[in-house]
Length: 189
Image 1: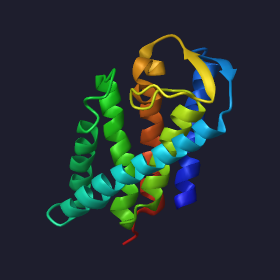
Image 2: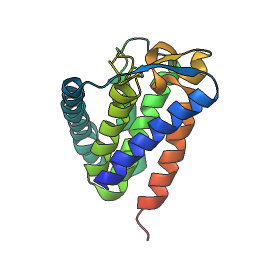
Image 3: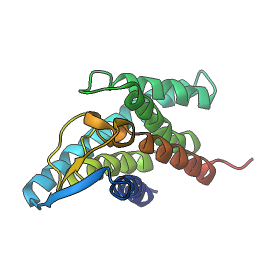
């Protein structure tokens, strides 16, 4: 499941990157490789993903399970997750909605398995490939990516200054991923 999460983050961001290129909304300016910077980002995004997942899914969501329906707990914990990002630069209604959906995506596995390996790896992979590899902003934060790219056109498609997480494409990809994870891991009665 840890490896599935790593692959899932890459596939979701990679698909969005390629789709924006095919639609003519993204062009690549340059590709550079810096080992030291890349290793630093691996460390940064690993710590960030683990901390957020332990706090939001491992602690908050897990404690909500004791007092309410697990799906209601998932929604409330995802609202808290979205609220944690409200101070991010260039936040929009769509980007907050997508961060809420990311909370659902990261939490649906935990609802079924009470395990953090997939949420941590998916969260890490999503952020790592989004910023340090494909050059998008990560939740509104500018990151030096291996790919130097430029987006043009509607912010609705590209996510604008917030990055890919502010895109309607991201919305649809996360909804599809939520459905896949729910049906893959749901407990059969």
